[in-house]
Image 1 (spheres, rainbow, N blue to C red):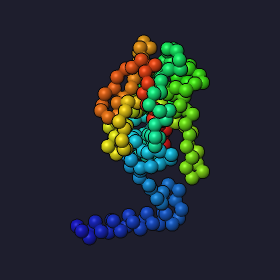
Image 2: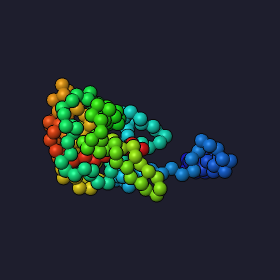
Image 3: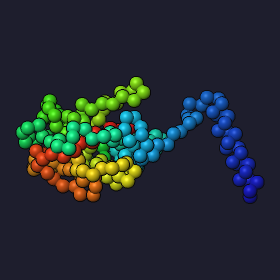
Image 4: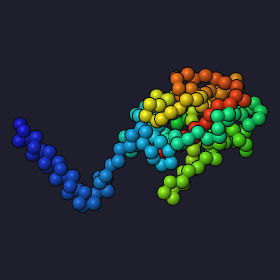
Length: 196
């Protein structure tokens, strides 16, 4: 039995080596597996997509990257000076970018949570990463689940998820699991997110 196993293992290895030496485009020579907490593409990997998430690809890792630092201080407002409804109601993994685009389209120029994230950019080894957004309620909650691997977060953060009936917007405490609705004029922190 061991002989048969050794034969198949050797045959599989030789077959793989043969296809790699022939330049078979379907076999990658090096697969790099990223982990939560790794520095990557301008930030820190904070969440890896799983089979239930939109955008999941069994053949390639995807996930969320958070910026290394908060942006805009600890007193960032969700609104841009007036309480307008944005319809940014997406609350799941994959909704943050669309929410952010809706918020900025409705609220325009200014210095508020979603716009701070859109305007954020970072350069690493001459590569510019400028596709950041304000995470949805679900995205920020998943980031909270991995907080032990990400460093110190001892404050409350805005999400891009607006509450129904324009009653406010969702926020996430990253020092505990609480998610609550707050008035859009209340000050909280912002941590931009991007996908990879």
